[in-house]
Image (cartoon, rainbow, N blue to C red):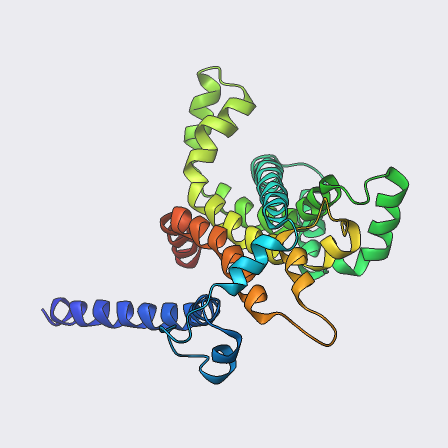
Length: 279
C-alpha cells in the first residue's frame, strides 16, 4: 500500500528533475537565439531580455545572408555529418556484431584495440592525418572530413553496440540460420531492428561532435568550397572587431539540425540510455 501511495510522488519528482535539467541544458540555446534577434547594443546591455520593439533587429541574419555562402556551408556540414553517421553506424554495427557473435583468437584483443580509440583523442594524430591526406590528394575535399569523422566515431559505436548485441537472443539467430537465412540477412533483418535504441544513441552522440567541430575543417578543408558551417561562422570573428549579430545568427541557424535530430530520435535515445542503465 505504501509503495503504491508513494509511487506518484516519486514519478512526479523524477519528472520535475528531468524538466529542470532540460531547462538548464537549453538555457544557452535560448540566450543565443534570443540575442540573435537583437541589436548589438541590446546584446551587451540586456543579454537576458527578450527582444522588444526598440531592441529587435534582423541585421545579424541579413549579414549572414549577404556575406559568405552560408547555404553552401550548411550543405557541406549536412553532407559530411550524414555520410559520416551512415558509415559509423553501418561499419560500427557490423564490427560489433562480429565481436559479439563469433568467438575467435584475438577477439578480446580486437575489442580492446577498438576501445582504445575512445581513450586516445584522434587529434593527437593530426599531423600524420594531414600528411596522409596530402599524399592521397584529399586535402580541401569533403571526403577527407568524412574519413576522419568515420574513424573518430567507430570506437564508441563498436563499444556501445557490441554490448547491446550480446543481449539479442541466440535462439532467434539460430532459428534464422535453421530457416536458411544468411549471416547478412540475420544481421540486417533480425539483429538491427532490435538494437535501434542503441543505434539512435550512437547517432546522437556521434553527430554533435561532428557538426560542431572546428579543428579538422580548419586543418583539412579550409577552402571556400568545402567550409563547414562552424568554420564559415568564423568569418564574422575578427582580431580586433567581431560582428556578434552575425555570429549569433549563424549559430542559431546551426543549432536547428541538432534539435531536429534530437526530436526525431528522442524516444529511441531515452530507451537506449535507460536500457544500458538497467543492464
